[in-house]
Every structure is written in structure tokens, then in C-alpha cells.
Image 1 (cartoon, rainbow, N blue to C red):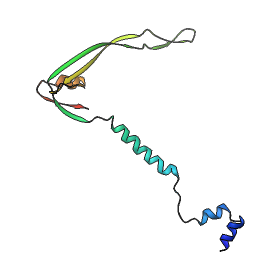
Image 2: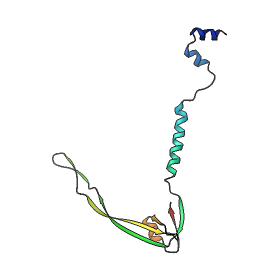
Image 3: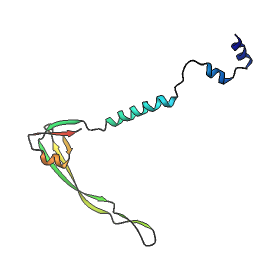
Image 4: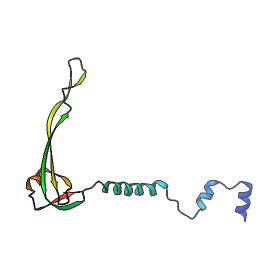
Length: 123
């Protein structure tokens, strides 16, 4: 009764109200951080490798010319410049499954793959 009267008169301090509150308070950061971590990891799982086995119907190696930036160097005056762009041959390795879909594979998988045999790929 006395506490109600104090509240009505505005004499109840906030510190006393906090001390008398029996329910523990959990900061929002303590709840939000683990939730964000779980959501971030779940989002990354969509980009993770999902192994699948396919039967090789065909193999294909492609080569393309790829231009890569040259090395950075400092001139005599202290200016930073990029050397001339360099051209390189980039190779891509593919296997085709029985359904006609092409799948990229590593060079090691490509060398080991044989038509009619199974190979494990990432989807």
C-alpha cells in the first residue's frame, strides 16, 4: 500500500523499481547474436558442396584466353603503376551425365573419369 502511494506521489525511484523486479532481463544482444550466427551458417550451407554421383557419358576440356592484371611496381618518381596485362590460357574440365547435363570437375577428376564409369561431383 505504501509503495502504491509513493508511486502516485512520484517518490518511487527507478533504481528501487529495478531492484524489486523479480524477473531477470536478458539483453537483446545475447539473444540476437546466436540467432544471427545460426542464420549466417544456414545461408552458407546453400553454397557448400553437395556430393552427387553421375555416370560419365562424355568428357570435354575447353581452353580460353584469360587476361589477368600484371604486377604492381613503383616508378622512379614513387608512382605506383600496373605492368601490362598478361594473357594466360585457362582450362575448364567438364563431364556430361546420361541426362545430357554438363558438370564442372577438377583436373584430377577429369583425368580419372572414364566414359561409362561413375564420378563424384559437387552440385
